[in-house]
Image (tube, rainbow, N blue to C red):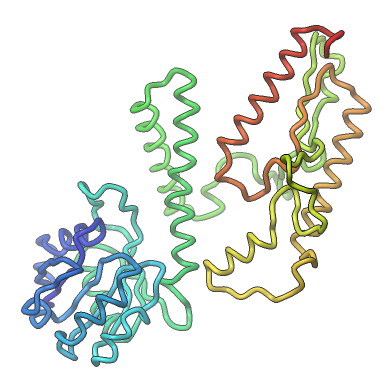
Length: 370
């Protein structure tokens, strides 16, 4: 199959490199590579399959530009995980079968693209386009995964799942490295160690599946364990009678704080400082899934559930602190962040440090000033 790969970025470079390997030649694949912005007409006329490995937003424009130079028998594919085959509508109107082949891999370094051998390539589109994509994926040494309509894979929800795992894992690793640095481990050693750890996790997921790949006492017998903070958000009772000289409690359900000039919300559409209604709207837009309409001031089920849960925990925390009063309490405003504000971790850590320093300064000044 004479294949033209358009795009010299990370994905295009990796794909062209894989299709130049002996395995691909043995499968009858011949490849040329070109710039997505200015492909040569002779290459377009030569190609039996054209793969657009270009930015998502450029797909329609490039498809319209190349459609007239393609043979109607040629197959047009793109590699954008967040877009469906409809992005190549101009090529389809030319008579070309269109489809998507998205390599599910991390492309972080343009200089050293990842090997596509042993990864999975998700494929969808017109039947002939699917056949061509399956051939190309196998020629790269990858495992083709064909998704039948009406599933929107590739598409926004699929891309969100992939990004959550890839970038989310890298984000967790970053937090882990920063912790090891504070413990005295060298950065490269910490990165290498956590990278090796993640490879073992990936191996468990492939071999055991989920949730079997999870480690730790999640299930004991017939009991499924959850965080003890659900029923005991301030576990202070065990400290009484243990001989400690000073007890400091941390209460995450402190009184809400509003910046100067900002008024307290009049409706219950915000829970814990986080607008769940707005968040779910943004998520539904990203995934292409509609949400039922309702008045903006009408709290949804998630709002009500989280408000109820927060109220229960705050009540429990107040009772614990009243029954077992600590020497000092670090109060964190309950609206400091929301349940889904993972991107604000550094900000919340700094807030905790600030409040801890304030508490220690009060202790240092003595009870008269505290």
